[in-house]
Figure (tube, rainbow, N blue to C red):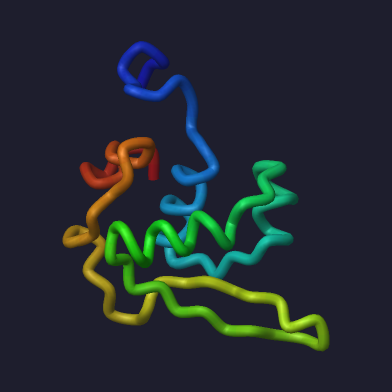
Length: 95
């Protein structure tokens, strides 16, 4: 997909988060910082859960009680409602 084909100019933190989750990854704030230099993972997760209805599982780990996020087992990713910046993932693109 070329830059001109995207509604948004480049993959966003929301795109990264959606892609990681549908690829079966468990992600944390530390993962986001390391991979995309982001810092709003909690807000993105809240948006995906509340506005888009994503079935996201949260597990708190370690002495610092760090949140780790993943899609609930058995989630049908073809039925997810995607944010505008991640719509290309709904068609199997950029995965």
